[in-house]
Length: 153
Figure (spheres, rainbow, N blue to C red):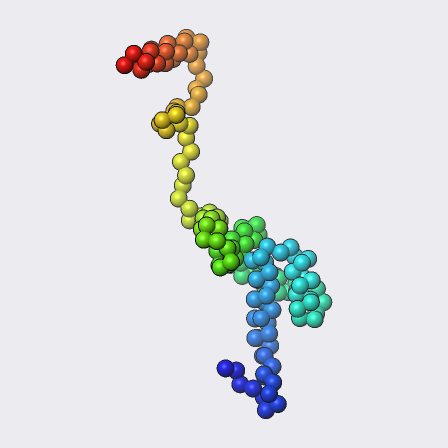
């Protein structure tokens, strides 16, 4: 429990603590996917400051995200959004699971997905190749022979 002044009020926060509170708010707003203008207005209203005062905190929050992820801004925004979705307990388990999958993709931790053309039974099919008319006729006859054997067998 924080110490209180003799007057019953909580002591004022240090400058560093105030800075951290403001930075946490800005980072939370970024995580919610708010646009920069919305963040500035919300910050100004919350702390009774000008919207321009939020820019310093936004710059620092984005710097922290870049340090965690690299220099790509869209990747930082995506990371912030999906990590907020994973952490939000109001989301259903399914939504949080999908958000975690997307977060893994952003971070490059997903397993590769095989993409191949398949037939109706799920077997891989070779993709189309450029054939000469003679080769195309031979392929067609081969397929017709395979089809007639399947129907007979």
